[in-house]
Image (cartoon, rainbow, N blue to C red; front, side, top):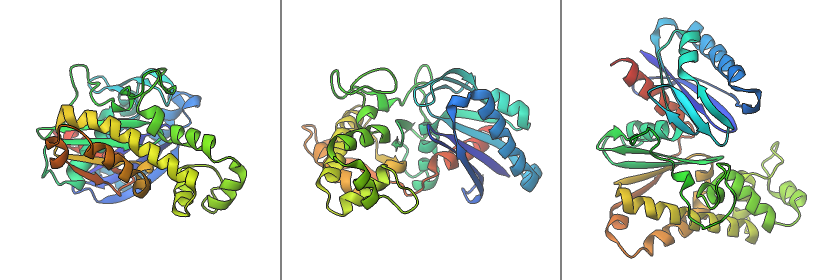
Length: 314
């Protein structure tokens, strides 16, 4: 039995086919292009699923969907997504009708948390906090070995914790959110304030074939000793530590898993983050918690596939 996992991000959408052990059999990726609207997006999803079904037929038994934003998992509804600019969008039901496969839907960070629980930790730790560091910041909670939703299904919106009173504007419409300091769009905005000549900076540090200012470019610059790039990553680590400290104090997880594109810059932001955590006055939860960086760039889609299999086979 195989499952399809879908990870809907603000920039890209990833799809994978995996078995119950989490082995990858197929994958696809396309630009989310949220501005074209949900109907166009769901149609594109269904087209990729149809391709998978031609290859794997009846072995495919379920779909798991992780969507960036505030999700109602019971109704398969995306209530609000700041980075997609969508409100009250039904995703699971329409996709289920178009594909004939049962669909389970969660917040994308919840699916990444499930992926971390299944694949990174092999269910050996039952209390896990996962932060997805990408265009925005999401978080998912596994408490007592179960995905935690809260009273309205909205648990885990850590990206919108207010860490700076009346601080930088966030895509959610608020100010001072963790995401407004540690989401990739915020990191790049801060870099533009510090690096000066952006064109020359990109020419010198961007990856070949990707000549633009992004987190990879900033990581390359930091590795080359660029003071502005290192300052951006240090500030990112400080702010991430501020948000994470509050979450650890409240939740007391056994493990924190960081994933997503921004986490690849771990060498440059982790020291500042760990310093903030080490300076907390209540020591016990910070001494016990393990910080783990996932190298699986598709943890959200893998987790979605595995969650969909578990949900669909009950």
